[in-house]
Image (cartoon, rainbow, N blue to C red):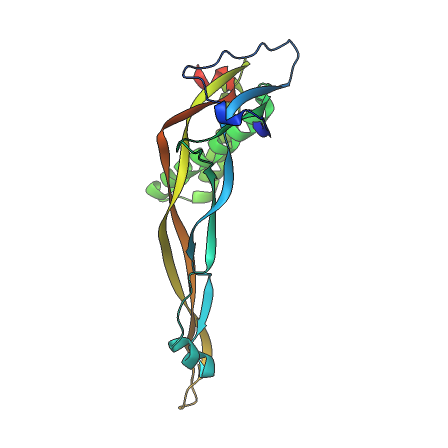
Length: 237
């Protein structure tokens, strides 16, 4: 895990990321975290488009008549972090720091996670076997889940045994976001109403509309930067 912190520099316009991977800083024995400086693109919150707010449209009474003739306003702003561009059309960079966590993975936590995964996986297998054999599902599934906990815990612990952590760099593209419109979903809302014949019936009284933005990422030219991160040996062995 890492935390990024900008460090403003008066010569930001002249800053450029290295073309090759930087040399990681030395880590002293016993350090659990380290502040690693790196060149990062400057970003700012920018409105990239608009879409409607989620809304409920009633079909009853005066509200139903008004809604039938109303228009939908796309007035909800969509924000994304966009790179700041310089006069030359290229991203502007600054010095930032990443707080890199150097603590190895916990065998206890990985054991618990492995146990949960194992119990779910073998529990489903046991239930499938029981269904296929036409016998009671619960005892077989529970037994398989118990075995899964034990097996998953052992595998989880062994997967991080001897884990060591070093500082490495990931080559990341500088991206800008593009608003490509929005998606709409709707669901009818029902409520009981008494009919002329005296019967009670569920009828549609309105519609709920929900909107999701469709945003894509695009690299700015051929711009990259190197972001530091904690490299765990157990993730790469």
